[in-house]
Image 1 (tube, rainbow, N blue to C red):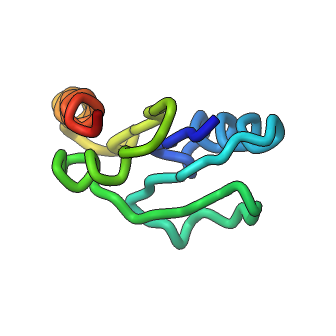
Image 2 (image 1 turned 90 degrees about the vertical axis):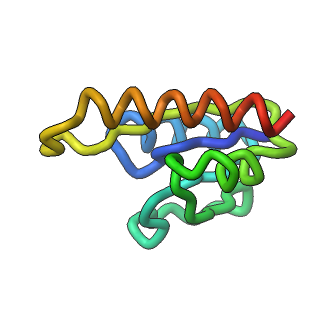
Length: 99
């Protein structure tokens, strides 16, 4: 299965990434800061992406069987609630556009 995983460096996302790779899935990790991901695996592709850029995200999601979002705008973000909502809405729109 081809999985697009948003937020693979966070607490939840890293656990999902580990599990998906252990089950031999092909994973594309979509990250704000790809350099933070230290996992190396032949089934892992790492790409830089901004989930607030719906068009860019839609192009990154094309060809995947499933999209998993572990997006978190940051626990210290003073506007975490609104940022989470905006990010989640952008992911939903990108999934629809990606086909």
